[in-house]
Length: 226
Length: 237
Image (cartoon, rainbow over all chains, first blue to last red; front, side, top):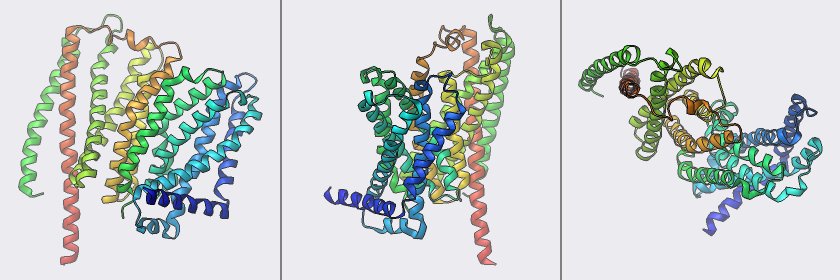
């Protein structure tokens, strides 16, 4: 067990060192998320629609779109110079590779989201501070589900000819339950409803997370196989 | 596959062709002659006898994809890969038919081509998932990699169906309840003649599924055989 955790942390550490050195992924994700929010602000008339009604949807679209950039990078980076082959030659379990990638994707996306949230507050003139804790829980559940399925499909798409195109096409229809769930929950939180009002949605997103982490553990061996 | 086996399969296929033909003849007679026209909806309601079997068939086909994907990852036998591919193709065709016949039926009855009702939405998402499945297959070259990836997606996609169902159901629950599906007659029980007609139609479509499966699987196996022979000939001459 200890060895397994060491292997995972080694992969996460490697991703962080690469990112700290190149700094290309994080800035790209952040600027892209900002652009998505900006474009959506232009496309809806905020003086007519209530910000708390369209806000959650726009926020999550920005998260998911820029998260897709991160996912695309995560295994593409390994394809260059045959790093993925090196990773697979390591006498480690394939699930360690999956969890390492899952954690680094999750952490990158979470940091990006924490930077976006204050800007979202300012742009939409919504006060998030009052219900920060439930909001963070929802963001945690949503981001985890997105990364759990996204990491699996990104490892799969990285071997295809048209990887950047195929990943969103494969990923987005499968993400529908989680998108509906988190947008609905974020909307309810912004109107001040307590978490106990939306237990069904929490259950749904949590079971999405659990199901797809489980499926990934079972199937990753078949994807990372040469 | 030997040539004897192919011939034998062809004979079985012939029986299935006749059976399916007869079943469809019976279904046509039942739909257009036997069953009386529905009182409130009129003649357009007869599209139900195509709409529901198509929906049933696409769900059944996707379930077969799921089972065959699991069996493929377990046994690593090309046979299961062929089955899941054939079944996914048939499923997508019939899912498209559901999405086409649905609006045709909805337009005169609900007054709109499309409403964001739970069932419609989940069928559309289902269609998208399996179209992306077929795209994944088209994107990668034939071989073990394509089969493995497709199998993973076949499993992931099917497991998503219950989640999609509930999320879409609750998504709509916050809006005025759509009265359309309940008043359409499915909930309040149907006339026995309608049930019989629907039953015949379901049988006919299920037979059609097996007929299509047989043809598609045979086609794929012959393709493999041709590839094998080609390789042999290249090196022997």
